[in-house]
Every structure is written in structure tokens, then in C-alpha cells.
Amino acid sequence: MNLGRLVSSGCPEHPGGANGMPVQVWAHWFPRGGEPSSLIDGIWKKEFSLSLRGASPFHLKIGDEFIGGEITEDSCRGRFAGAQRKITWDLCYRSTFGTTLSDKGWIGFSRSPHSDAVFFGEITYNEQTWRGDPLGYSVQGHNCSFRHRRYWTWAHCITLPAHGGPATSFEALEYEMALGLRFRKAVLWHSGKQYVFRKLSATRRDRGEMRWAFRCENRKEGTSLVAAIDGGGPSVHRLPYAKADCFGSFEVANNSLARATLEFSRPGQPVEQIHTDGGVVLEIVGE
Image (cartoon, rainbow, N blue to C red; front, side):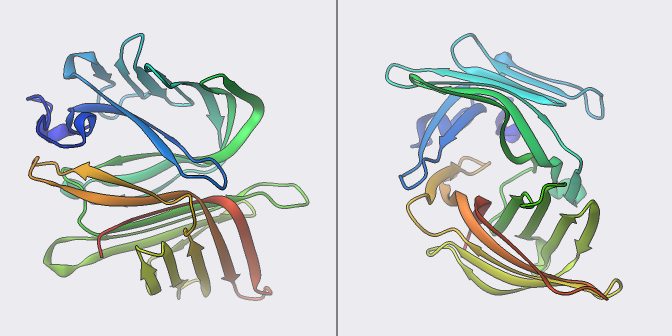
């Protein structure tokens, strides 16, 4: 949603077409070993409804019988019915952990109500249908801001232990603020416990190669974590986003089939290495 333009018709001159509409539905397809693709369509404000701020249960609904979707507290549904491609999804999710990475008033917020989400239901893409319980593991999140950040790096990974037990999820975020300041925070959910890191220093950030490596620590608790996120390869997806003021666009690079290696240290315990191949999302904006 382009909230700043809901009172008008969005950004009708945006070269991305539907990217300029005031309300949008996006579906991205990341085939393993292949190039990703997108289905994006725009919807008018009159086809949009949202629960009141702070209301429970949460509910967002947009669109009509051909294009649209909805998000509730524990489900998401959507549909595209185009001339050449058709995709529908009817999913529910459950989780054991949620977190708020950022809540900065007028800047906005970044929240993951379901950080270690287990999804079940079905997805249909053209003539193929996948269904299961579980169908997959990932994250369900909300983001809000008066404008897109000019500099933004975000990663989320989830892994399941080979011996069973609860999932491990890790999420890290860095973005620019006013007066040259940067917001940085990372949260690890591991063995049923939350570890928060507010001190984060990058050793590598490369939008072209889609690499992000950093060290984060919590000196008070004596914990630290070294992360290496590798988002290179054919699954990198680059899309132009319309600026909130409609003056131009900027590129967002995303790989939802990235890889990660985490080395987690805590007092009195051996260093743990957590590795996942494909269970990672990496998104980078700005140089």
C-alpha cells in the first residue's frame, strides 16, 4: 500500500504500471535453481478494508473475485487470475515466537508476529498444486512507514534441528535514520529462548553480490553471534519500487532462497554453528 497516496490514485505515471497503484497484491515465485518471477497487480482504495489500529483480531482484505487477498491473525489467502498465469494460496500458520525489531514512531515499524511460522494449507500455480501440514516453514511479518528507507538491509532465517524440537529463527535489520544515524538490531530464537543483540557491526555488505556478513553482541549477557548471509545465485530478484512521493523509483534486491551460517557464543557453552541452505531471505536497498 502507498498510504501517502491513498487519497488519490497512487502514482499513475510510474513505469512499473501496477507498482504505482495505491493498493497492491504481490506474489513472487522462487523456483530452486531458476530465475524468480513476479505477479503484481493494483487495486483501488474502495476495494480495501483494514481493522482499526490496535483492534483484535487483526484483519486486512483487498480486491475482488479475480485479484485480491486477505490476512488475519493466523491465515492468509490470495488469488491472481491472469490471461497466462494463475496463482492462488490458502494458508494458515502457527508459531511459538514473535518479535518487534523496530518501532520508531513516525519512521514506522518492522514486526514479525510469527517468526518461526509453520504454514499449512495449499498453493496452486497454474496447473500445479502443493498442499500439506506442514507445507513449509518461514516468517509472517508486517512493515509500516511513511516512506521507504533509502538504505535497508534485512535478513531472516529459520532452521529445524535434525533431532527434532523447536525451530531456530534469526532476524536482523539495519536501516538509515535522520542525522546520519543507523538503526541496527538482531534477534535470535534458539532452544525456546530469545537473545537480543543491539550492537551490530558489518564486515561485508555487497548489494551486487548479495552478501551480508556481520558480528553482533550483547555485552550485558555475554553473548555474541557471527552471521554470514549468502544471497547470490540465480534466485536474486531485482524490482523497481515506486517512491512514496511518486518522484521516481529505486531498486530492491531480494533472494528468498539464500543461505546462512551463524556462529553463536554464550557463557559456559561451546560455540554453536547453525547452518541452513535455502531457508533464508535477504533483502538489500541502497549502496
